[in-house]
Amino acid sequence: LKQIDVSNGQVFGVNSEDSIFTRYGNNWVQLPGALKHVTVGPAGVWGVNKNNLIYKLVGGGWEQVQGQLKQIDAGGNQFVAGVNMLDNIYCLNRDPTVTTLGGAASIPWNLLTGALKYYSCGPYSCWGVNAADQIFVMKGVTPDSCMGSNTWQQVPGALSMIEVSTDGRVYGVNSAGNVYRRDGVSVANPAGTDWIDLTMCVKSKHVSYDLGVLWVISKEDNILACR
Image 1: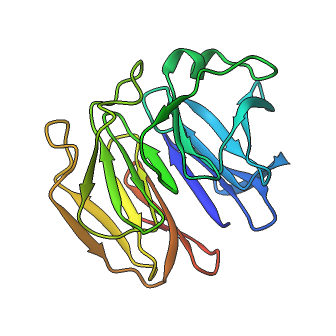
Image 2 (image 1 turned 90 degrees about the vertical axis):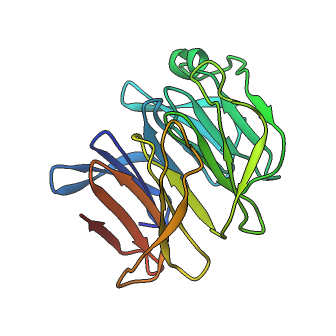
Image 3 (image 1 turned 180 degrees about the horizontal axis):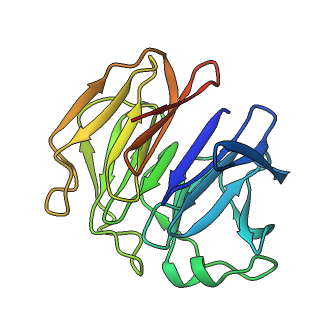
C-alpha cells in the first residue's frame, strides 16, 4: 500500500495503482473503484481520486460529492476536512458530512485561512503540515464548527505528513522517513509538549494509529502493524 487510514477497528488503504483495500479479519479485501487517498473515521469512509474528485462510501458504493480535494480526512467528530491542489484548506460540518449522499447536491465547504499540503482531524483539534514541512494545530474544533478558532498555532518541528487518531493521539513522518509521536496531547493542551522519535526498523512515508496499533507504510510500500 502507499497510504493507509485506521479508525474504530476499521482499516482502509490504497496501493500504487489506486486500488482500494480494507482489512477483513486477517485478510485484505479489494473494494471496487480507484482512489489515490482513502480515509475512515467517525465521519464515515471518504476518498479522493487522481483527478481530485471526492467520494463517500454510501451503502457499499462510492458516491461522488461536490468539490475537489487532493487529501481528505474523516477523523473529526463526524466532520471531514482536507486540502486541495492549491493547498487551500477546507472542512465540512457534521450535518452535511453525515447526511450527504453525493450527487449534484451543493456542499457547504468551509474555507480556512492559510495553506497546507496535509490536514488531519481528531476529536478536539486538527493538525496539518505545509509545503515547507512546518507543523500547525487548529484548536477549538467542534462537530458544528469544524473551522475551530481559525487561528493557527505553529508547533516546533518538521513533518511531511501528520495524522490525528480517533482518540486524539498525534503521529507524523518527516522527510527522512522517521516516525514521531506528539507527547502531552490532551483536551486541556491540544498542542501537546514534545515530539518523541519512535525508532523504526524501516524508513516510513505514512502512519495511522488506532486502538493501540500504529500502522506504518514504508518507503517501499510495505505495511507494518506496530503494537
